[in-house]
Length: 407
Image (cartoon, rainbow, N blue to C red; front, side, top):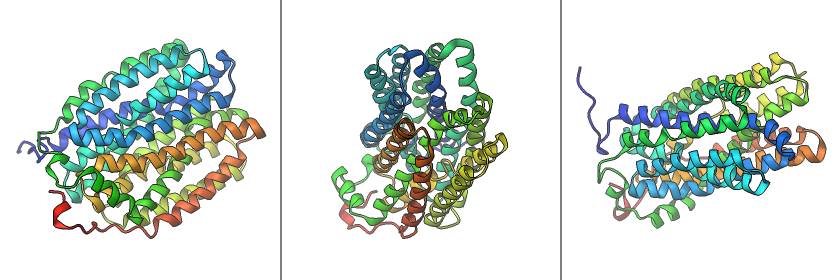
């Protein structure tokens, strides 16, 4: 048996997958349980759901706005440095989230600071290293493995976080999670690329890459689809526990539903990565968005019972982050890996704008109408739009002049 060979980035594929998967497991696992803090925080602080929802919306927007900058820095100076800073900021944001007694402080900590931290500790940065380490024919699979790790983090952390809240209180649980987030920093050392193995080896400038991408129709369509993805998953992730409670279903059903979403997301994201190597990714993305719309329509149309919740959670979980591997694989396939973290960050910015609207409108329209019905149907309409938008995407590598072709 031969030892794993280092790639041009100076890393082995196994090393990158292991460290990257563990980092995504921590960063995504922690954030997926934020919905369980809504009820205890607004009860103790005397806030409305919109107050909490707005902070979570700002978190997603800050994550998206900081994403391209984090990606640019990772491509230029090394992903591991960005990941270390992301882990430290994540821990600080969780600590401040626990002690913020005013809406403004809560928005700045839980919203702005944690959002920026997530931009430097999640998919875009990890995928940049993967794109430079894994061969082109295996990228979709590798992206699926990393996305599945984030899903596994959700599955594991959901029951852990609910247990911590019940045992330590919501503040104590945040203190412990802050310490857990610090583990991202040492794991980032496993993603130190050899000098010259990253984006600097290419010949395309940042400005050239941005003009090329934003002037390309397929990139615009991918961003539109990712906007819808963000709207749907963050609305469901944050507001589903409260939606179920409003209909008389207890915390156990909410916990079980989010666990099922995380569990089936592991299978869905991995399957999407595998299928992306065999079938056109645009068709795969269209199918995912279309099936999401169908699943939501059925869920809100049938009587709400624990059984219907669990079936919906399993189906939507399979489709949850399954858009991530094919979307990022298409970006790498079209533009190459030189500026992948930065371009992935811009695509994710669109995702987070959708996330902002999904989580904020969930609270805003609930307070205005006393129901989530309008937002559910809006999620359905957007799903149909994303299904149609992804069909004309071109997956072939973009043609460049030799002067700007990445090495």
